[in-house]
Length: 524
Image (cartoon, rainbow, N blue to C red):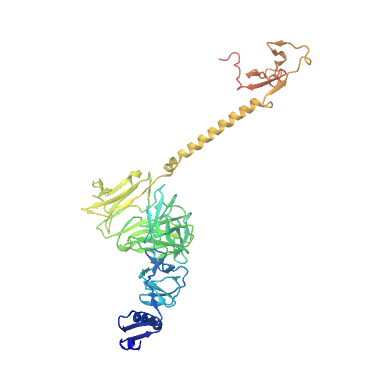
């Protein structure tokens, strides 16, 4: 054995880092005994032997996108390790993590937790291979996008809200809110809409909305549920003026030149107001120059938008469109809807003066007036007059503006006439049924008719019969005769009903017709 050892050169270079052997260089012969000895020696020296098993790393939840604030669990699974006690090593982007269980749980994940995660198992002197890397990408907390259709209310129309989130198939549920003005905080609070909590659909329909209102949505998923930020509020506007809150514009027109002075005044039973604007680029802002309940604007192009009032108690006024133009001329048209049947005049104006003649007017891009007049007058507005209008002077066109027509109350009442028809029909049928029941009761009840019992012949010894009917049946009622002629002009009739069920009793009902006065002698 000594000669065997002397004839083989064995070099062992061991660099030990902690408990892990980083290099082992062995030069030896091809003896099987030496190979076995090397394996045992390396196990003793290095303390580990690698097991040809590769764990699998999974991510829960398995959504394609994880957002800041969610709870995430990274799990390490070793096939066939049931009943075996393993400890685990974790690393993120090749940097060790102080976790020894098979789950690495992050309660509130942040963007800094993004990276590639891998694991391996350890048991006694055995180590598995490192697993493949799974990548965790954490994004900022999302904000859904709310859309509202239609933007402007029309009578009887429903409003549809749509809430869009990134990766919409990833188990989101949706929450729907109405924006309630909070003037003290210069913001809005959110009031949950009926049946608007945790809907599976990303749309929500509102019926019967008549006034300007703002809406908000957000989404949630997971257990415990994680919620996104609230969406930016979106509004549906009503142009109808109502008594609770209204907005007046001076000068009363839709279009204005740049550098015009325009005032918007809130009116209603409230003492604290704010004027809000939704601009063309989708930004929501408050009026910066409020004097009491009036907003003063020195117009610029950025002032184009939709304006409305909000009160401290949460009331919304009607909404108006304001457009600021740099055109040669502007169309002068009313800012509020025109009531059906009323008269209206449209005109064209330069910056310094109103144009008095030779103005062309267009309705929905169709020329409707091209004479020497300077105004377009509609004596009785109808719904067909609603639409876009613009004017043209000296070959130059103004921008176009929408003129809305408000349906009259009588027209609204006529739309409800089928309801009243149904009510009348139900009432009529009910009355007929009641009358038939009363008639039936009258016939059956002994108390609704004059009834007398026919006594037996032992009680009427001098009586005789005529065609099977007692002559005593011929009964004259004192209530009709009273022994005088004052009722000669009353026609009466007596109807006799014979009760076939008994020979002793008959019922006699008296019916009285409308009095008919007999003509006097000598009268035609």
